[in-house]
Image (tube, rainbow, N blue to C red; front, side):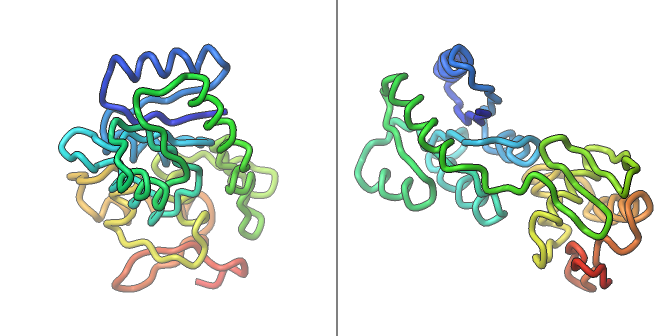
Length: 223
């Protein structure tokens, strides 16, 4: 099981990570919303554990969950928070999948994580378009029998588009998702990466929606 922990209390985060790792769980840690956002799309996770109160906003965890769901993140979300009022729990269960107030028992945290993990992974192991195959877990792209070498950002853009067939992403959407919320890069950097993808993978694999942004081409590759 691979778990993303989003917790700004460094002492608590270190303790939780150590306990989970001692039980064979792979853990990645983020201390704020921006770092969590980037990690969520960079690596595959089975469960994400979110604190509600993060730097800059006492409800940043709820907002992060809303943004992740809106962007297509389908893995289970478990809130781990000192806020244990009924309205907080209800909100957490509406935008996430489980809510565990602090302080908590380690055994209960592990039990809840395993229960969420058993729900299964909603992501396909292989995404296909014509003779192109994208393997998210391996971060690998092949065309026919040939491996296609992509940079990390090129892969992230291709994966984002192919995981959401039919959805149009604006340049700002892709910037926020791949470079991080509030990125200071010029939006035309997305155009450069899309151009590279077309050269390296296939000219028709990404459609341009004029005046809006980009989407993955249809199965037939109509552009």
